[in-house]
Length: 289
Image 1 (cartoon, one colour):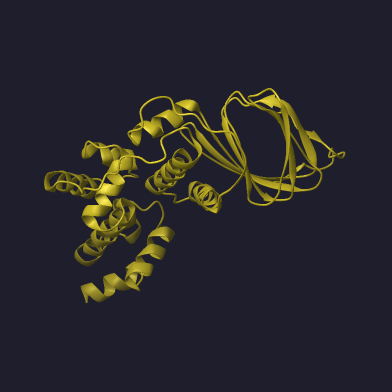
Image 2 (image 1 turned 90 degrees about the vertical axis):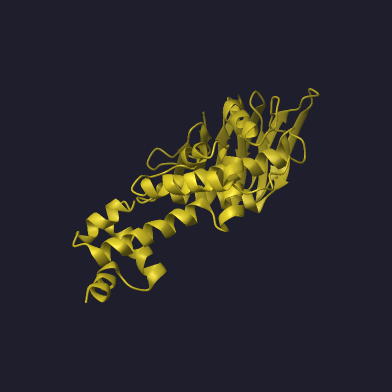
């Protein structure tokens, strides 16, 4: 995407901050840039732009053929559906969170919600939604972590898209509610699958497939049945297995961390101490003496 910068930036980058996280055909970016302008272009994907700091002026051709000019300040969002033309200008430093996703990804997420037909992002020029901001930044932070959880990133991405579909598309305003929990058989199969694969970086989709449900319905059904999220359950099971191995084996602590799904010893020790109030080393000493 072409950007024309207002001042000569040959000696330094006009990009002051850039964080980016992508998941399938879904990307979230946080950027802070110097003053500049973006010439008119046609959106190649669905775009959501949330102003974090500064002001931006946008101009676009509406579906009626008229030209519309809008000014956005902090927390104002601009929704640009695929195929929409738009240009923008900002006269000072500007920080934004951008969410890009393909029509295919939008449709896939909608099907998970049992919404038939083609789902289209509605053009919106002045929405304000703090939940989108918080979810977007949490998603970036999670994916950036060395010990990031695919399951947690999955959950954040799906929650964000569910919120967008429910509030900012042509989908019906209410979806069929899935109120029941998992059957006894499905819950047993899911728990067995999780317990047998604690060392793996499981995704919500992989676990949901065991229950033969979409991840959208599975997450809600699991919480209904167990009282906690799948991620919380997996974390608890990993810690319980680590306790057993620490108490009953002489395996190195770092190996126990790997066998229970922790990517590094630092993350294992931090989470273990948070839940038990003891480090793995102290836990072993207490249990083996």
